[in-house]
Length: 213
Image 1 (cartoon, rainbow, N blue to C red):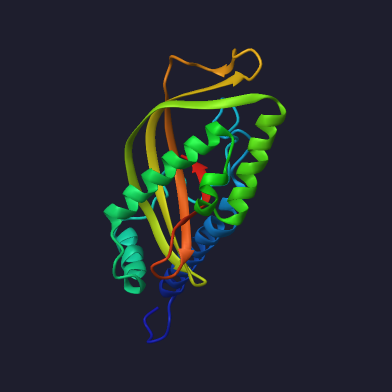
Image 2: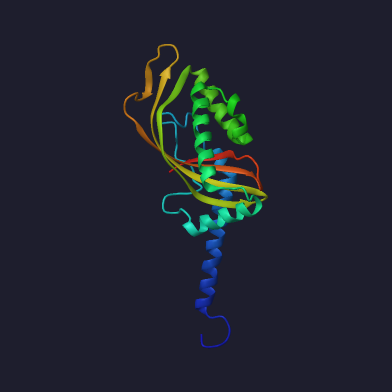
């Protein structure tokens, strides 16, 4: 330990740093590759959301400095990028997708999804149509939209936003109009991570994954 070479402490320290970098890269890759498969049948409906493998889990959110660094890298390739405008855009996309979900028609919002996310949403809507049910989301009040992770990988920008809202979430039968799940009077808390991606640069953002908090 007293020589000029590496001692046990230095070896353990390097190993720890290496493992931390490995975990960070692995988690981000899961956000890009697995996030699109986490949206399950009638995800907004009562009991439809099964706990997915998450890109971010409670207690694992990056430090603010990490988020700032990620946003800075995105801004280097898109000088017009503004976090506040991005948050406003996320809110607009959120309401548009909610409306399309309730109408069971994705045609007006096709451009807002990656191909995989659109396929998953369409499969869920097809199941609602075949069962003659409507998942209704009403009185939505968005409390906050916060960027919790930002990074670049393989020529793509990625940003994950945490959306916090209250809403009425219930499902009705097409034929009878009867509520078959949820409540028309008791609002529920809505907290989800929405991950968006785009080719690096000033390009439109598309929804690529949804995870529950």
